[in-house]
Length: 93
Image 1 (cartoon, one colour):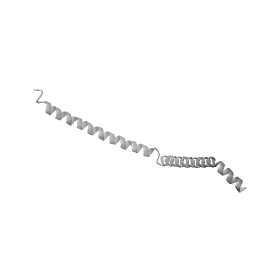
Image 2 (spheres, rainbow, N blue to C red):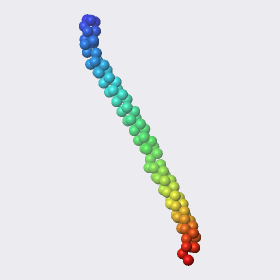
Image 3 (cartoon, rainbow, N blue to C red):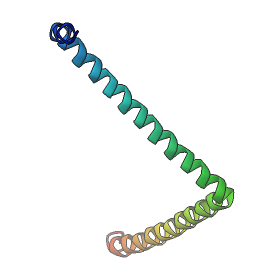
Image 4 (cartoon, rainbow, N blue to C red):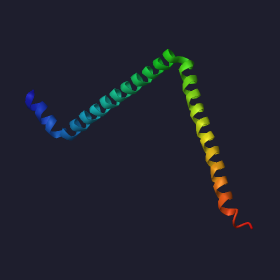
């Protein structure tokens, strides 16, 4: 009996290695999928806990930052215009 199994294994060694490799690949795929869905479920839970209030607060902070940046840009543009006017005023005469 053992001789027959050993003989079959010797003849089909490549097949056995291939099947074991496929089993490992399927196991890795399952583990990866489980990790992905666990992470996704965690994100959904966080969003449900924080709710829309958290998202609105984050967006308000972003809008505030954008407003500050726009104000700085306008001040810089005005300063540049004044500098250009001052430097080119002698050329216009």
